[in-house]
Image 1 (cartoon, rainbow, N blue to C red):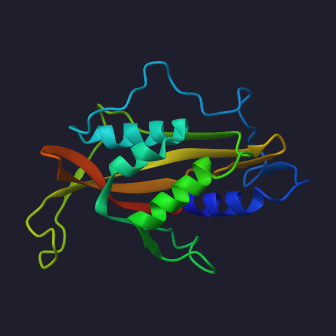
Image 2 (image 1 turned 30 degrees about the vertical axis):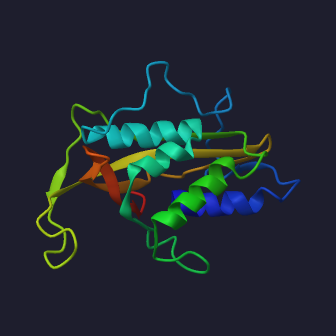
Length: 197
């Protein structure tokens, strides 16, 4: 859903004269332009699983594509929800395509006023499930962890054009522990957009 919104948003950046709050007309954009970063928010060192979600949310709020890149494993795959697939939207894409889409959405236009992402989780109660990757694949023997959370995504293109996720969209994040420059850190290996719950 986020990728579909991003593709729509980037396309509409060049469309002028459009007004309204799209996708969910009952919602209104935040008064402060969105993208409110809590004063205590900071990028964590990725030594704990929840750090991935914290850093992903903060990277979007700050439009920090370097931090988004740090979160993605070299074998990262993004999977679109079934409802998003079709036309120019593929079933999945790799790390390079995700980085390009994030950069295009977050830094590719001077008309983008704000991005607000709220990945809804509590680090103390977040539940991770162990996942065994393909025993014949390159990650055989590893134990990955996966969790499913809801999120709210608001993309404010200009004063009169805002995209807000409708319903309660969910996403499944799968992470793996990887050696990055001699330090073991958790990184995103899979991101699956799911249908609204």
